[in-house]
Length: 460
Image (cartoon, rainbow, N blue to C red; front, top):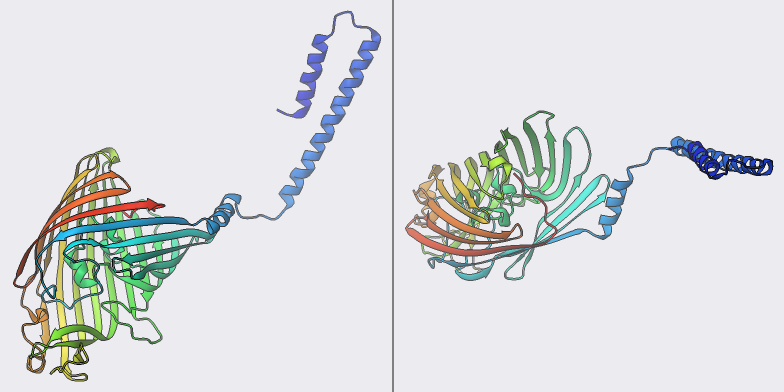
């Protein structure tokens, strides 16, 4: 409604209140009041039109909402904390290993009895309208603190493009980008253990992703980084130590089904990548690998929930396969303990080492009623093929080392978990673990996972 209309209405109200026999003086007074009202409203309208013209002539500025979020978040970052612990019953094995595979990365847990796995402190905020930062610190039960992620991401580059820099969880495969509290089982798959270690592969570097403007979800990504963690090593030199490429395709089938498939490739270089062996006198010594590692991963996930409502019932099927080839040289690095004497003395060359190995896992999780889920997972690893100079190697190392085992690791796990809310979960798991030659281990795990504060949405 405009202001002249209001003036007319007001005048009409005044006229309606006059008696039919108004005098000339009354009419004169009324005309004067109407003229004053008209003049006042015309002045206000002129002032508002002037302000509007000035606003339209001013240069464009970023949206007030975006600027406000960045400024407010800079002083009030989102803070979250994940608390995780367990009690585990399993055999006492001095040197646990996955037979036939080079030990990978670091591991949390695998302790008998009660243990604090590791707690995660999560900080994130928008830096300004164009950037967002996030950090994730893992506090282990022994009090050590590790930077799991610390990265900066772009916002709103447009055209489906995004860039991330710093330390981040590589998006190769499916499970690798998940954190431990997002897993559907109490521990990582055997595949992840041998490829990148329990906590997965973290990249110090740069990631670029692009989402295609198609009806189906189609994403391509590339990463370059330092490559300091397994299967690479810290080479302390300029250039790129590891690269990764990945592609993901997904979509919906009706209102109740959704799926995603992916393919990834990872390449890393290592220099003197270290693990421990027993020498011919059963003294622990360092074994060193220098060369290249190439890994290909295929993954597939299918989810079902009636009409998309996953709170009531749902099924999730998930599987991944991998193939890794490594080629390089094998050598000795001397005793693990400086006071020991070993046949695998530092600098002894053991010839070439070439491997080709593969495996995978398949799992199903069924939410049969609100809050309750049950699941089954089968892990398998092939023994693959290794080529090395046996005469030179077994002259200094014990052939009984797990790495030289001609063995196919297997594990079967079943779990039952209950979630009081999306922030709390209790889980009971049983696993028949035959990952290590000569050890058939019946493992029982009782686990809790609790989340406090801000917590972002999980991946598909």
